Each structure stands twice: as structure tokens, then as C-alpha cells.
Image 1 (cartoon, one colour):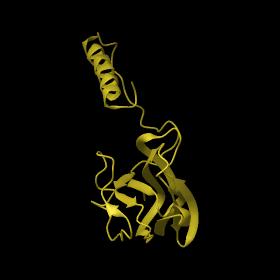
Image 2 (tube, one colour; image 1 turned 180 degrees about the vertical axis):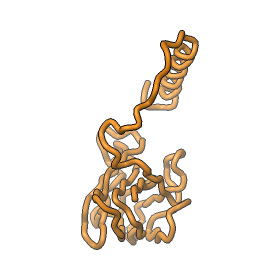
Image 3 (tube, one colour; image 1 turned 90 degrees about the horizontal axis):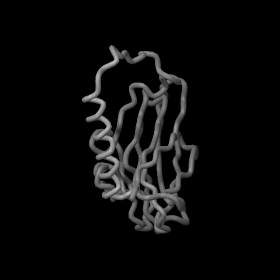
Image 4 (cartoon, one colour; image 1 turned 45 degrees about the vertical axis):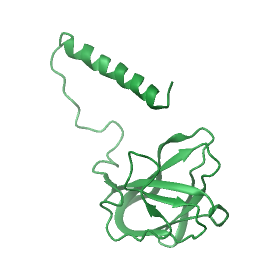
Length: 171
């Protein structure tokens, strides 16, 4: 049943039923949320960025929009063979990339370069993928730094597809 639209509906109904039952139940007393993070505060204040609010980017060979209907302001590489990188500059302490994975072999891998150095190769193909978003950390600093980010398909994947849905940035 899951993951598909029908399965999402079943999960939504079960969660809503839970909240309805909790709302109707007798209260035990006051509940306070602890202000101290359970693990750490590394990602507090993270900001979501996509083509609608990331300033000064150069899309290169990536088109605006993705195949994921919930992330329409991302970027899509459509296997054109023209392999110009998506580029942007940003000040960040942490940088995450949100992308789509699926179990279709038309999806390829891209190189993530920061300040001229390859830091990661990310593959959109995953034999267990189902078309949903996945997050990968592409920069992990302790202090904010000026970053020049470039992403382009691997040379032997220029005929493949890749959807970048957005980025998470912690300054």
C-alpha cells in the first residue's frame, strides 16, 4: 500500500484518527516541551533554499523545475549531454542537498564540488528508491564559511537524469 498516493491516504487517515482520539481523551495535566535539544543544535535555524530564493545561481545545464510535484522550484538535469554545472556562492556552516532517488536506471550521479574540490558523488539511482526526497550533507563546518558550490553530472552519466529539489543551509 505504501509508498503511493493511496498508501499516503491510509497513513494520513490513521494519523488523523490518532489526533482525533487524543483530542477527545481526558488530559493528564500540563505538558511542557524541553528547550534543550535532544542531541545538539547543529541544524537549528536551517533555511530551505531553491530557485525561488537562492540568489545569484547559474543553472548551467539544469532546467528549472523537477519531476516531483511538491518541489517545483528545484533543478532538473535531463540527460542532454551538455554538462555545464549548477553553480552558486553561499555562506554556510552546514549545507545539505535534497534530491530525488528512484529505482530507474535512467537516473545518474553527479559530482559535488566545493571551493574547487570534489567533496561527494551523489547518485539518484537507488535500487530501493521510490521517487521520494532524500537528504545528503554536502558540507559540515564548525564556523560559517564562504562556499563556491558546483554540481555537474559525472562524465559517464551525461545522458542520465537528476533532480535537485533544494538545499538546506545553516549559517
